[in-house]
Amino acid sequence: MGFDIARVKAEWEGFQTPVAQGRYPVEFDPIRRHCHMVDDTNPLFLEQGICPPVMVDYFASRGAWPPGEADILGIVRKIPTPGDRLINMNHEFEWMRYVRVGERLAVSHKVVSVDLKPIKLDPLAIWIKTESRIADERGEVVALRRNQILVHRTPEQVKAGWIRPEAAA
Amino acid sequence: MSQRYWEDVREGEALPGFALELTMTRMVQQVSGTQDFYPVHHDRDFACSGGHPDIFVNTAFTRAALCRLLTDWAGPAGFVKRLGFQMRRYHLLGDTMLVQGKVVKKYRQDGAGAVDLEIWAENAREGIATPGTATVHLPFRPA
Image (cartoon, rainbow over all chains, first blue to last red; front, side):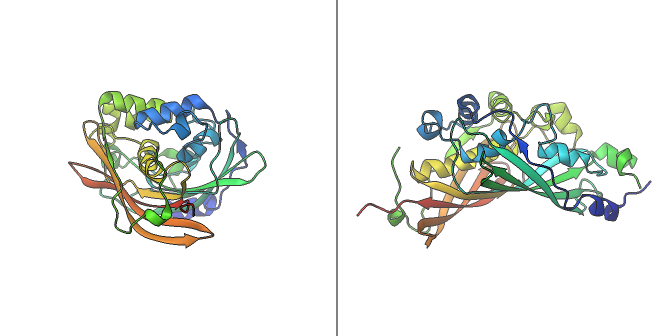
């Protein structure tokens, strides 16, 4: 049983989701939970209604749980990789402006590249680059996000030669 | 919260960093604060079965810490233009994450006072586990 990276690249590189609206508007309560987890007492966020810049994708998505089509990990899981364990390795944001409580955001994601690069843990490790465009209610982009996600198998799966059935050539 | 002005920034200047102890309570706050329920960040058995030494903090927690470093430093009229980082090594349950940075370069960009920074998160086991870079726009000091 093998794995055909050329087929996966041809099928998935360039794949783009339609624009999906965030499930909820920008709200104070998630902002406060976000701030408290890192002891951030900034009044801009806790009292004045500015959204911490790194939260725009949170409010542009349907949330991480339950996983939805708009969530980037949900898309990555659909790519037929040999393994099913994910790690976010590189993360980059660029902002055009800050957003405020009450605004509604939307997002579209693109799969930029899918590459086979072995790691110590797994000779069939897959590296996936994605780009996300986060926009406001007028469709104007407020932020761009780039991710590089590593998908690998567990040591037991590698030892057993296991590959996800949907990835087997 | 005081305002930092572009004219007052020196290249090589260190940002006031901070420490976050990664207790189990903090790991629970991480799940609540990020709504990231992937078990590698809260289920020790699941994490170890995947070849990881223990549960570790996720991307959203890490970027929240790095972003706090920048927004605390920049002040209320500052603007974080860009933030990028690499998750090279783990910040595990039990570690203390030190979040720090320094000014690399200051310049004018599109009418704004731009500052490029090196930022990172380190811990005692791994040293710098999460290196990154950022660009912040600061206001000019009123005449």
